[in-house]
Amino acid sequence: MPRWLLPESISDVLPSEARCVEELRRLLLDQYRSYGYELVMPPMIEHLESLLTGAGTELGLRTFKLVDQLSGRTMGLRADITPQVARIDAHLLGRVGVARLCYAGSVLHARPAGAFASREPIHVGAEIYGHPGVEADVEILDLMVRSIQLAGIDRVRVDLCHMGIVPALLEQDRSLDAEQVYTLLQSKDVPGLRELLDGRGSQVGEALLALTRLYGPATGASSVIAQARATLPPLAGIGKALDELRRLVESPQLQRLQGLELSVDLADLRGYRYHGGITFAAYVPSLPNAVARGGRYDNVGEVFGRARPATGFSLELRELAALQAPAEPARAIRAPWSDDPQLLARIAALRAEGQIVIQSLPGHESEQQEFVFDRELVAQPQGWDIRSLA
Image (tube, rainbow, N blue to C red):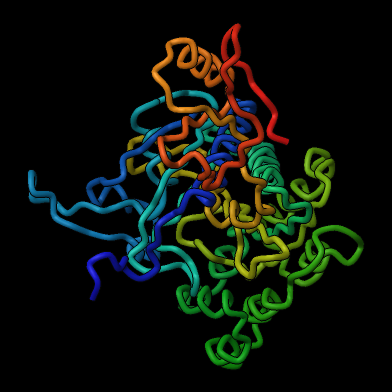
């Protein structure tokens, strides 16, 4: 095996892609700051019990584990940043009111999330702590959609779900295996669900089967929310969940977003061990899988000393950057290689203005690489002037 061969689902990021990724990262973080989100930078590695607390078994399977040579304790390389941000809010910041935090950084997966997914994705996201109401979910969803649109995506479909519905049903029939119910609902395995229900004609059984059919438009007379009210039993937990979904989809803030299509899928229960309220997944026309996911995860910070309402989202930056139209090569100014103090001063001044100035090394004057030289610095009696190469 060649020494330079990288592990499976690990790849280098070459100049043109790296530039797109970095420019989009800066745009996203600037946007989050304009909403009042503060940037945090959690460590790449933590003690395993801290890294996986409250995160569920799925994250544990995706986490690389190793032994710390200093303490002998088991460490984990982060596979998700959200639990780390929850720890920061609960354990380090200790704020009483609302905290808005954002992040951007690489994570590492022991196994890829999909057939063509990288095992070293770059996650960018935002979280709100301290507010239990739907208003926080609206703001986070608004910010998630605008993040995708910053990449030049005009149409975004967001599938909504609520993790309060299935627990309300299972509470009525505790003989059912909850793990099996969630697994079968996520895959919409109706025959398997019927077999698990073992011919029960109970209200709970019929409601669970109905969840596999309750997906479609979020608004209108035939909306899934309206269908669910007519189909599901009138339990308090279900009513509360449907009320929250209705308030979300009717929010004027979301209705102002151009190109947003809201739908509901009450069997999209991914992350049910972690989430506890409204969840959402964003899809764009050119990708089969969700480009961003998020939702409410109240009280995850309890293990760190403080139970806090929380909602947020994360997206995979490299996937999102890849959806952008190919960027035009950057325009640059060519300058000769020289020790002339006047030339060096002019180059420094142009770079301070934000211009790209490349000094051509001797013998490489005709090379441009990924830049396009549209101007050059030329010596004149009064100093160094810029001349167009058009």
